[in-house]
Amino acid sequence: MAYEHSAPRNKVIYGVGALFVLMVLLLIPIGRSYFFAILHETEQRNEQLYPVTSVEDYHHEEQANLHAQDLVVDRDDKQVKLSGGVPITKALDELAKEGRLGAPAVAPKPDEDLAALKGWNARPNPDAEKTTQAAEAAKGKEPAKPAGH
Image 1 (cartoon, rainbow, N blue to C red):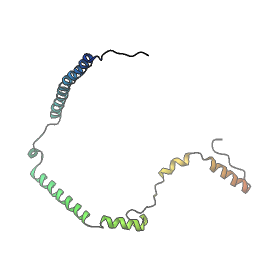
Image 2 (cartoon, rainbow, N blue to C red):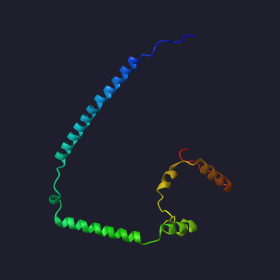
Image 3 (cartoon, helix red, strand yellow):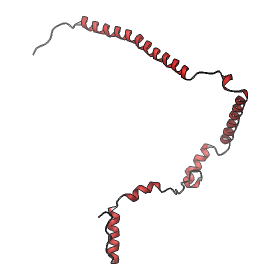
Image 4 (cartoon, helix red, strand yellow):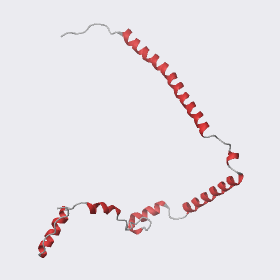
């Protein structure tokens, strides 16, 4: 068996490491300057496309007051909704005892929408055809041929 007895090439290892460190130190500022230039260009384009107006020019005092009143009404409505009702722990206990059928707010309701079944009606059902043919044969009628045959 052969063994290698040469010394490690430390100069090459340190040289490659120094090269990578130098590349990283040079690429970081170059990358930052590029992205800052793109950001600055985008901000300038946005300022030209969407000019900023002052709040006083944009909103009249009456509109600002109406907006503030709407916010107060919304806050009051939310407080009324949150203050009334049953505490969550009590509601969870009732739901655990009675199930969904005992709580009308979360009880399942029959659905009148038959759109989900529309696609199933168009599909051929060989089991249904066999059952229908067997039932007709039992009654003494001639079995109907499936559509498209």
